[in-house]
Length: 296
Image (cartoon, rainbow, N blue to C red; front, side, top):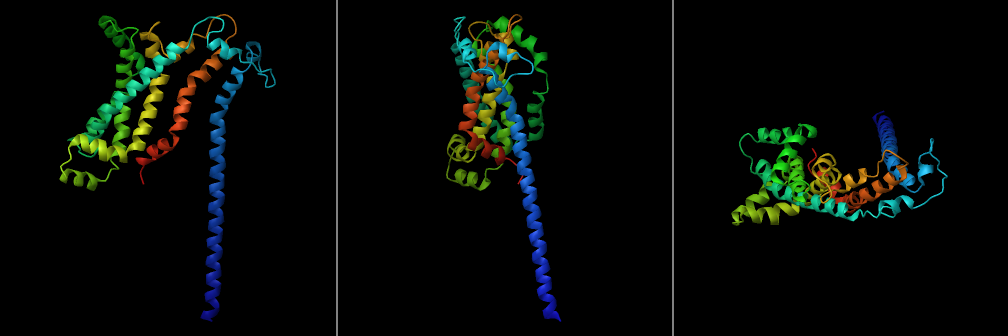
């Protein structure tokens, strides 16, 4: 009797396991399909912007838009000054310089601060972290007038150096929070072994900590670069002809007369390319960095 029940029990267990496996596969398939749908939804505006940039102004302004309209590169010619003679390269170089320099300064300042708040925690480190975060709670418009008055009295209006300092201060709290979560994953045993070997803080940071948290540094750098590249409000108010950035140059295509949609889309595509290229080049490090500080 027992010998008869044993195969039945084993078969029932196998059937239950097969059923649960099939359900898990269906659930993974549904989640994968949902992820693809979300990706398509987020990609559609970018694809629509690119398609509109290849249309003429009259075709881009039709409602509903025409998908079969003839394609042209006139919008890109206008962006590069075909009719106005205004070159987009100075604003693009300004944006690149400001974004790269501010990102490097953010890394130089945030890594030691995050090291002190994670691996070598100070007293009441949570209060310090929330103080960093509280600086991001002030609306940017509320600080615009004081910053403008300080820049005017200091003679720093329309100056790239002012934007570098400003973007560094704006991105530093986010970088400290991100780098602290990454540095908290560094094994303490490695640091203790380095200390026993007589390694100082610069050696520990450059030769031990940096290789371990390299994905986190890449993710933090890319996010700070994107925030600096896309910033418009302060750049619009604090710059003029010399230090104007790419987003400020982009808004110059929006006029009160005539059609401008195709030119704006073409300019938006060109301005977005550096960020897209940087994100595509660092996508592996970005994924590793964003998952490095995750709760396991």
